[in-house]
Image 1 (cartoon, helix red, strand yellow):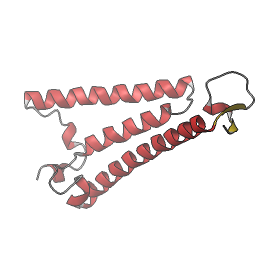
Image 2 (cartoon, one colour):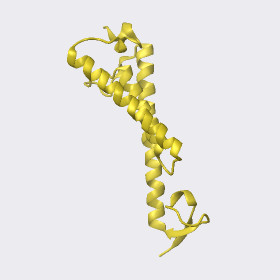
Image 3 (cartoon, helix red, strand yellow):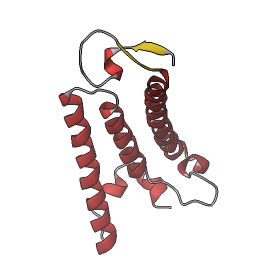
Image 4 (spheres, one colour):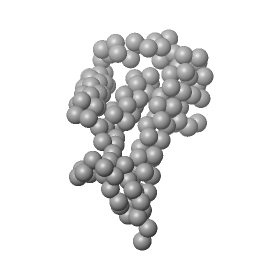
Length: 138
């Protein structure tokens, strides 16, 4: 079996110089890291497209598909923040990056509870009207 040298960031500890690993495991790690970054970029792209759709009035950009309901701007923001949180925690993050990612996830969780309470009580706390109020009222 062919062996290649792997940089320190792609292995789980040991000496600080390069370590020889099996080619297939290195390839798996690199592929998974690429897919994680691609997923974060895709989520951020959907969120930005959604905001552009709300800002310009292009209804197609506020929906994931023709028959789907529209995505409110807050949902796009929460998706973008969760994408950033996942991006911060991929690879071998420092302790600070892990805690920032977790804090962002907690903020999104709190917002989710606020929105669920708003819908369950059928009262508006005004959060829906922060961005694009004229578009959301129609």
